[in-house]
Image (cartoon, rainbow, N blue to C red; front, side, top):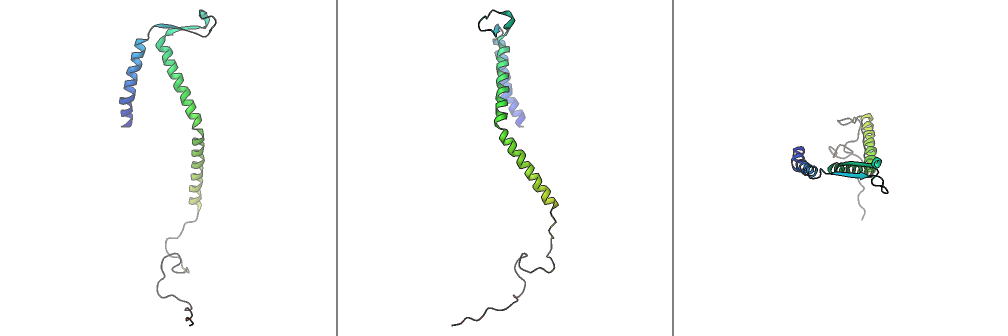
Length: 130
């Protein structure tokens, strides 16, 4: 559902804009790498303007993606560390001895299973002195 929404709302208008940009900028443009001799044919590339625009757009997207990827590296490292820690804890739980489900024989009632059954046993409290 979200993929279809992205396709219709974002990518279709973007494609229409890029096609219109390409059709409007079909003139040949000289791109030279020699600022001191712009007429040097060995260092000059002549292509339609929309090719240069698309190349600039693609290079900008690649550089931006790489910058984002590098900046988020610490979060990926933290996620790897926490994933490894979670896996270690899962393995420790699976290796731990299982806890019995019922009451254990010889255990003191009321200590961990809930309130004691019947009257309390043991010495009574001394009578108060006045």
